Length: 366
Image 1 (cartoon, rainbow, N blue to C red):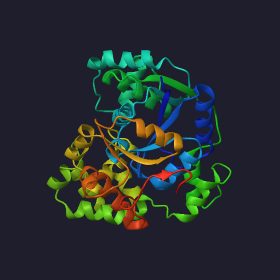
Image 2: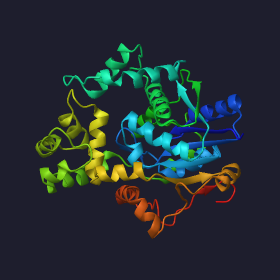
Image 3: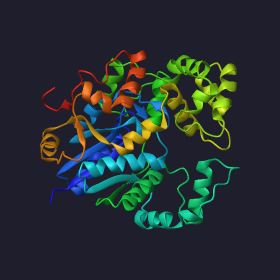
């Protein structure tokens, strides 16, 4: 049986710690093929990827990944539960039989996931707390302490989804050790104009030199226009616009001079910063719940890059049950409507085409 290993990543940006993780997978498990499901041009916390998806995919392929598949916006800009649901669905469609992820501590993820699944009927939301705080406290009552351990939280959600969806994927972990490699530190240094060359491969540095790095500050005027030009009824129709948040946005946008100030004004004990940032992204892009549901009901595999091993694996993959997309034309655009629209908004600032005329990176060819 072919050992097909898969993992989920943002590579925001790809750094030396990611390289060590990939090398560790190969040294420990000796996969026949290694697949990364990678967030596209938008990331989970409701932000723009610091480098575009094409350059991040190429760097990953050049550093040991055999195949990179895009995690669509609909899955990538989500809470941990839905981020995991979408990414595990893609791994299943890719016929991955071995999941691997990093974890801060060795845990019995299968047992913990079973506990969560069997006790969900007991969960009650305390509306005095944020959803994240409430969930953390609930997990602690089950003997699960994942506070401030994001990799364990995601890992637990991955395993929970595998069990609930009955996917035939075995779970493996790589224990993370304290490291100086941090995507957050790299983004911080970049924003301060400091060098980060010691933390990343040369290719990452080179892409920073070639690309414009976009931030929410670039898009605040567009977000402000969306909020001011739409009625509260129209804003309410956006994805995850709940509990009167449309009124809060209408009120606070008038007094906010930048994106950070707006988020600070809108956030509360009920909603985390990441939750509000995601809501802002949905508002900027005018995302509807029906569009998100459509991607869950009609998943696709968007190929961003591969090496020879990845190419051979794709050629042998059963393609009857899912659309496999290597280039975008009129037919594919209908399926990728949300992704194309999101990327076009990114292009307002970068002026770098992200879909039409783009083909996967093929190591040794382009």
